[in-house]
Image (cartoon, rainbow, N blue to C red; front, side, top):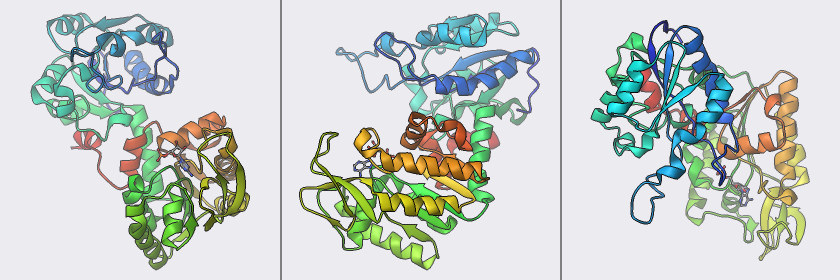
Length: 400
Ligand code: AMP
């Protein structure tokens, strides 16, 4: 962060979109924790911070009368947690913009924090409205974007607002800097071999990523539900496994592209199958090409785990996005667990590993291995788009 914050009011876009329980208590504070170093830095350097974030999807889950459920989605729920975490009082503005927030921002002194109400209470947020962005910008002297999780959205508080600050008055926060640096390390200067482990439910969500990786990676390991669309493209019998019928041809094309680019694309040799999508279903292990009717593949099998772990062990850079099976059910979590352990082991031997994308991050955390990989991204969709090679609007707005 190359800004001198002394006596400056910094408008900071953070990602405080944390899960809350019925009592409105924070159940996972990862995103807030990730933003604290930037906030502390601003305060320690003699500045004050005006924090803004969205929380949930208030526009999608309206009250019965069509109004916004302010009680559920107010950022006021975070005030107690924040003042504890930062050991200072946090002033809350019940408005995002308006006369009240202007007064509170004016009164703010160095070392103090003002938290604005949920940016998504304002209709102009998601449309990237200029007038809303101008009113936000008018509250502060400088702008800091540390909300990596929403950097792929061209919203008013993540993108448009930056237009109202000169180049030397806007910057990324520490979290944004490290997310970008780690993604760029994989994309631009990977130690080789570079192995991408791609899993999760659907091929359709990851087509662009796979196309990019075919150009970039030495090995692509494919697991999870999406593997079965590829197995079908090879002529396999996949029973009732999750297959996207309309993506079978595309999967065949991707297999060909990988071959032409000399990228080794590995599919699971065997699968743990079940006769229902349930923890209590009957289970068996069979070659992935021979899944009988009435059965579905819900995890990679033991032979696949060994083969994948060998490739991971020989890698110098590892990118992991998406679980290898239905890891939420203990019966089908072994594959994901083994891959997490293999990634941690390769990291301990000097490989650089980046875990990005919601569910693989959840898996690594569930297995208490988050500290044993090189970097765990806080942004699901944003990291995916960055790795696809896209320029994120929130990043472009700062870089100009
Ligand atoms: P994604 O959001 O695309 O990364 O997908 C994550 C989801 O994929 C998780 O909820 C997993 O339970 C699910 N998943 C992984 N493997 C399978 C599979 N073999 N069949 C069905 N769902 C799967």
